[in-house]
Length: 87
Image (cartoon, rainbow, N blue to C red; front, top):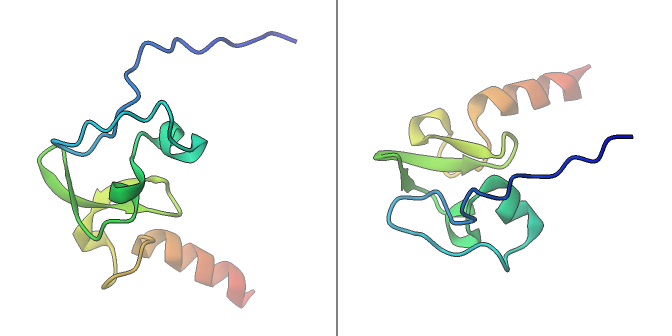
């Protein structure tokens, strides 16, 4: 087995604009996805100059228009989830 060593050069800070929260002591989930707890749960966050929301299913930011109301999962992922449940 080959051991993989992460470069570790990338700064562990939240990717939300003007946030910069240090994630070195944050939960593994938040470090992995480079988002602080506050912005992971926020209804709208500016990332790369665009108003977005963190999707719990995709574990990434999407434009707010891709979500229904206050939902935390994007429409595309929810549609797939609902389709699997109907089978």
